[in-house]
Every structure is written in C-alpha cells, then in structure tokens.
Length: 481
Image (cartoon, rainbow, N blue to C red; front, side):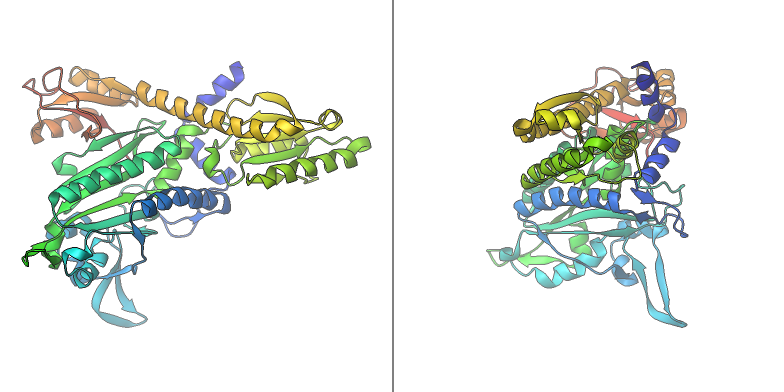
C-alpha cells in the first residue's frame, strides 16, 4: 500500500513528464508530427474523443440544435467586419495567400473560430421571426497560431472542438439560452466525472466581440486551470456587423441577439487524463472507455483448452449485453504483462478466468481504480460488472471533487495570495473590480483573475485583497494553460 501511495504522488510532483508518458504509452496522441503545435490523434485517443462527442451531440440534438459543417477558409473581409473580434484574434490566424505560385486576389484564413464564417450565411437564412431561434453546431478542427509554448491537448495550433451558434429574437431569449447551454456543458462534464469552476470572466478577459463570457475551468495536478468550455452572449454586436435582421410580427425590422459557445474536445480529453489517471496509466469513465471490460485467461498448459473455451463463453455472454468487451488471447505476454498493459489503457474492469474459475463456474473481477479483486458466479457476472462500472465512476468523480475542494484556498492578503499560487493552488480572493488591482494581482502572484462564480452568488467577506477598499466580487486566481 505504501508503494502505491508513493507512486500516486508522481502526477502532482512532475505532471508534465507524467502526462507526456501517458499520451505516448496509452496511444492517445503522438506529438512528433513535423509541424509544431500539430499532432496525430492515435486510435485509442480518438475513440475516446468520439465517445465524448456522442454524449455532447446527443444532448445538443435533444435541445433543438441542428448539425452543420462550414468551410475552414474565411475571406479576409468577412473576418474584418467585427472590429473587436479581429483585434482579439488577428495575431493568431494562419493566412492563405497563394494557390501554387499564384497570389490570391483575396486573402483567406483558417478558422480560429467560426463566427465570421457562419454569420454571412445567417444573413441569407434569417428573414422573419419564424426563422428564429436558429441553433446550429459543428464538430471541427480549429487553427490558432499560439505564441505561447505549445502543449499537447492543452495548447495546440490545431485542436478539436465543438462549437454552437445561435440567433434569437431578443435579449431575454438569448439569456435563457445561455443558461441552457451552461446546463448542457455541466451535464456532459459531470457524466465524465470532471470537477471545475463555472466562472463569469471579467470584462477585460471576455471573448472578443462578446457582451460577456462564461467559462468552465477544470483543475489540473500542476495547479494550472484548464479551460474546457466557454459560453458567450454576443448581444447584437455581430448582428450589426453582418446585418443579420429579421421582420418581427408587427412588421418592424430588428437585429437578432446571438450566442456562441465552444466545447474544447482536446482539452476535455486532457482533463479526463489529468484528473482521473494515476501512475499505472489511464483511468477512464466507463461510458467513454473504448473497451469497458478486458478478459484475460490465466492459462496452465494442462487445462489451456478448457480455460480458453470458458473465457470465450464469458466473452460472448458479456458481448450480448452491449458491453464493449475484449478477449485478450495473445500468446506473447504473460498474464501479469497483460494486466499492466490494460491498466495503462484505463480499461475500467478486468475479468480474470483461470482453472478454478472454470471449475466453479465463476469469474474474478478487478476494478481499475482500486485494483480490488472479487469473485462472482457466472450467472451474476453482468450485474456485477455494471455495478462495478458505477463504482469506478463514483470513485473517480468523488476523488476529482475532493481534489478541487482541496485546491481552492482563501487568500487574506497579498502575501498569502502569492504563497497560494506558488504552492500550485487556486486562490479565492475578494476584489474591488479595479483594473489596477487586477494588474497588481497578476504582478504579485503570476496568476490571473479567472472570474466569479456563475452558478452561485458569493458575497465578499473581506476588503479587496490588494487595495483594502470595499470589495465587490469574490474571484478566483490561478495560472492557466
């Protein structure tokens, strides 16, 4: 037990090395692609991503969204229409200037986000109030020339995300939709067992072109927060820039009110790995595990045929239940090597079938979180496996929640703020809302104001952590990816 406790500390002590090893050894992603900031999603990682998107897209479909797919190329003049937007993303875009040796008459860019790709089409599609609300989404790759150090999954120049865009008749309808989408993201992230803060960003850190922004910040073992999702109320800023209007029931013409939101698929995968996994490798929520159960025969030469036959019988029984199961019949590894291998890949439940199991018509079950063995009768196996799925999920969910609670520490002054961030925690502070104090917070601690809680009201209990004047908000300070 002491060895396991010591091993489990490694991701908190040397997160970067630990994370890179899991990405490589569990075949999540290969970062050796010869363009910096671009990587290859390998089979195991991409299968997890597809499961995550299935959960999200099903929820979007249920709430009246429709899927579409827009081009990756955006004309320069469309991108430049909303001044605040181009200012926010102008330094990060990849430009397309030539086709072969010919210079293009009009420069194009690869989408850094899709507002300026979609909204010219909204202008064509929206004519009257009967066309509203318009609620669309797409799951695509995004391109941003990150000037900070790139980091696999966390900060890449090509990354995966799902983005939604809507148009509404008025402010109240758009506000209601913002709350709906926050609920959708919250639902999906909870099904993945993740823990995070839902924060309204300060105005100086909102999405370029938005009235306000809300973000989901997930904890990370190194103390940095990982922004896994964002929701923005755009007001009529883009509607005015792109002339997106509709005819109301009284015949008047009005600008639509818009929202947009992004689910960072690459970052969500990073959060699953970072929050749930250990020094043996991945630990996956059963719902998104490419293989949920692996069966490993424990073979002795004199009973090999009988044990293999029983293992196949167990496999067929589990498969009939729709559980994603794999029978490892490979002959080049010992059972112990197979245990280690599938633990690295995070398979939630291992089934061991040996001579005694066959003789007694039983199977041995091992969960990935605690590696605890239990033996059940053949006829009870399905219920036992499903219960074990629930147990695995409850364990990783609770562990993640408790870690977030441990990470959040109240700062009572500038020195304690500095200490909290240096100790790789998240500081909870009272703030007067002045830009000067926000800049001082960054200067003192190296962290940044991530925002104040959207999902609950927190009233300041103390004066501003910097100036000592009356505080207006309780905000969270952290370093971020």
